[in-house]
Figure (cartoon, rainbow, N blue to C red):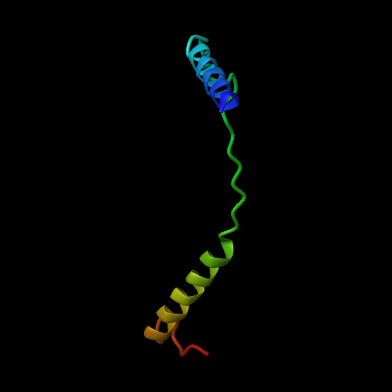
Length: 68
């Protein structure tokens, strides 16, 4: 019990002292760079292929003939 009381009082003192220490916040000299290497090319190509296929199916006379 005495050890716990000593530990709690030490913790309280540490918290009280920590509140007196000034904190400095400084912005970095260089901009922060976030590198997101995300590959979305495949999804875009599939969407374009589907849209083009639907367009050709709905407009068979678009290029003067039928689509395969």
